[in-house]
Image (tube, rainbow, N blue to C red; front, side, top):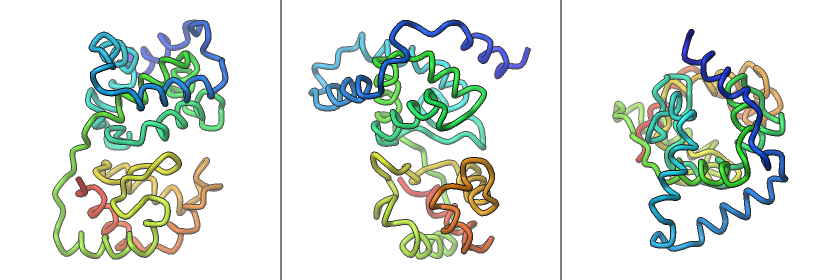
Length: 211
């Protein structure tokens, strides 16, 4: 049986109690974790967080750097942003045959722990042609800074693009151009629509190479 179908079968086991509590509980838990000093987050909690993220690692990588070209890196993403995406999958705002049942079986503490675990990992940028990178930076300054930040590291509401997989970035930009799936309703559809193939290649090179 292929790994993805095996994972799905395992995820369809009934969710643990508390998995359907409101997102405010998970956010409060995450806020407490983020405000605590590193010394107060003991090793047993970190081990537990890593264990809860084990299913995610099959696609997103043990350290949050994806092992599949079209699966995004989670390493270094803002913890609140990651939590929001888990919540969106759990609520049905986003849909995926792996991510949706996985998110729904996470209790609030699990969601906070997984978000914190991947947020603490380091992305691995890739080298890029200097000329292409320079053009990509210019396009990024024109179109992307307002939401994704001057360093492309995003925030609570917008994804980190710095150090993201180039294949995934390219795939998403073309998806926004064609209006495929949920991309159709995104503000990114209008932005991606004015980009040429050369612009996309340059943007991808620049973003994937950022630390």
